[in-house]
Length: 106
Ligand code: FES
Image 1 (tube, rainbow, N blue to C red):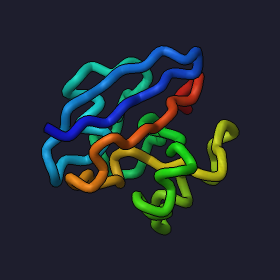
Image 2: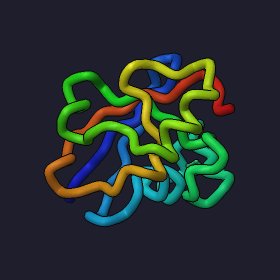
Image 3: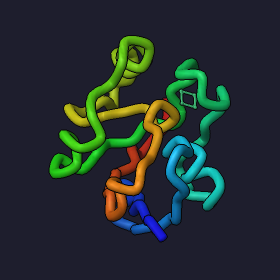
Image 4: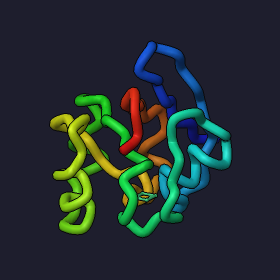
């Protein structure tokens, strides 16, 4: 079983199992990870699925695409490795992935 760890802004850790092909947002919501809302259902239109990828994983998971970039550019909590988790299709090579959660979803 592949697992991703979500780390909240206060350091609390939550592990969630995933199946290849799901979006990271789906992985989070199915495991009721606090701090991932996914209000638009994965259309890159709300920005409430913001995660900050652990820098060690940044190359592996890749960078944001144009639609994602547009949403992230409006987010004051954006960081260098920020992504919208709904735009990240997980694969088994991501087993052990660590992402941080911002204090607030915008
Ligand atoms: Fe709305 Fe990701 S779920 S932008």
